[in-house]
Structures are given as structure tokens and as C-alpha cells.
Image (cartoon, rainbow, N blue to C red):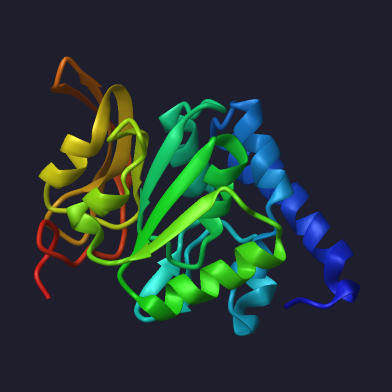
Length: 225
């Protein structure tokens, strides 16, 4: 964990990030900006990358995974239009940075991670930060949240996929509530399109936001090993 002596340095770097990389690139949702200001990204970054904690780029977190660049985290969060009563499913816990962002905006977050080591590390960090409205699962995220532990409604108001999928997994579409939104990177190649889907009367309305590059989501309804 970063020492207290670095607090001023991180605060200045975070202020630059908010002004230049977020507000300067079209992030306008005040709730998202507030959450980005509150969440200490340095808590989720490996010690060897602390000097880059607020640089606008992805960083390795181990297990072949990355923490997404701040702009993409803010953009995906903004596109979900998360309200305080929303129950959100996150596919790909990773280091827990995006999870913590979602927890600031939603009623509850359900997050799935394939690697137990990453999930345990994220749970430890969220515990230190006092985050209490997140439920964790270690399993194949392309299959969605375990059916036996779904919310009372049986579905989710919002779903975020934080790794690339060739197509949006059908189990996630089934678990998305009508009137709900899903955001994630979709594509077969090394680069993908960031897609936002709204579910209306069991049909999807899709909108492409921009080109992105994410690590692949491995699993039954994702990419093969």
C-alpha cells in the first residue's frame, strides 16, 4: 500500500487526470467524476507501477490481466447510466478498481472473476476501503452470475463486461432486465468496438461508442483457451 508521504503526489496526479483525461475528453456525468475523484487508483496498482497510477493507460496487474485506463473506466461507467437503485453485474473483477467505481454509484454490485488470486486481492483492497455493497464470485464470467444466487428480481439492471468477447454472451443477455443497459468490448481481433446495448421488450438496441483494446474473456461463451 502506498505510504502517506506520497499522498500529495497522487492527489496532484489525480487532479490532472480528472481535468485532462476525463473532463477534457467528454466525461460530463458529475456522479462518475465524483467517484473517479474519490477512488484511490494507487491502491489497485502493483508497487512497481505506482508512479503511473494516474497515467491514462492500462497497467499489468498479474495473471495476464490489466487495470483499464482511467478514461475507459469513466467512459464505460458513464454509458451505463447507473442509478442508486441499480443492481449491477460486472464480468471481470480484475484488481477491483472498476468494481469500486460501480459500488459508488449502484445499490449493489455482483462481480465475477475467473482467477481466484485476483478476486482475493480485490476483496482485500475493497475491505480496506470499507466497500460493503459488493458480492464476489469466482467462476466463468461468460456464463453470467450463478443462477442459485441471483437477485430477487432474477436479473440485473446493468451489466458491464470488462474483457473482450467475440459476441455478447447469451447468458448475460438473459440476465439483463428489460429496460437495462449492458456495455462491453466486442470483436474477434486484437481490437474491439465498445458497444452499449439497451434491452427493450427482450430485444437489443446496440450502439457503438469507439474502438478499444481489451484482454480476452476466456470461457464457454467467450474465447477459447
